[in-house]
Amino acid sequence: MLVNGYYGISLKPCGPLFRTDPLTDAVWAAHFRLDAEVGPLFPFINGLAGSATFVENPPFIRFLLDGFVCALNPDNGVAAPFVDRPQSLEFLERLIAFLNDIDLRKDTLEPNYKRWNPVVPVLDIFRLLPRTNCRTCGYASCLAFAAALSKQKTGPDRCPALVRPMAEQAVYPVVDSRGTSCLPWSSTSIRPRSGATCKSSSSTLPAWKRS
Image (cartoon, rainbow, N blue to C red; front, side, top):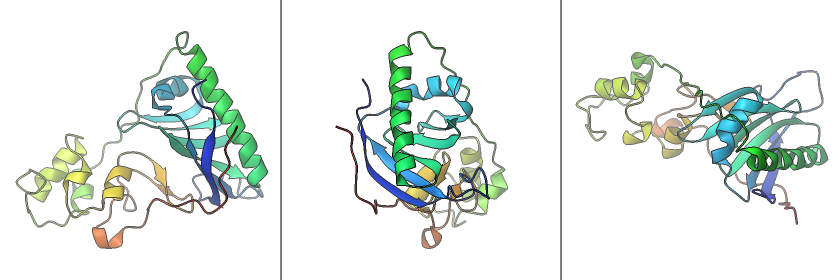
């Protein structure tokens, strides 16, 4: 068994990315951590799950399971929408069973390495940069850095004017503390240091872990 349990679960109001039905009472997103790394399973999930979005580096996958949206990093994730905490715990049991089943059968499954790979206009990236041409990133100008970033030849963390969490979040889809999407390369994904909005959130409800 790869995954034995989860911990650090907290419920927060979910944003529009997870609201599959605006008229439902399911308005909560469950944030959680896993006790094992499941990144190697992502290509297999990409081949099995519905509406999957797979990013290879850094590892991330977003998919549908039993009608719920689930977004996973190797050792943590968020799922929604739920009516209450008991429903979220029931889903997490189902998610762990799903992950362990894939781990047991991975030798007989066909992985799908098709990646989500957006093309971002150079000028859209350039507008988010400080435009000081400081060369700390290793490029002669901010425009040259933006061009390399657009072709994924470098990472946003090479620019000192970008907040580290924002640089990491720019690479793959994440949500903020309210469950609102911070999509890659959007204006909410990368902001100057003084304008960062999407940060890691801490657990606000008692942790629960399977025995």
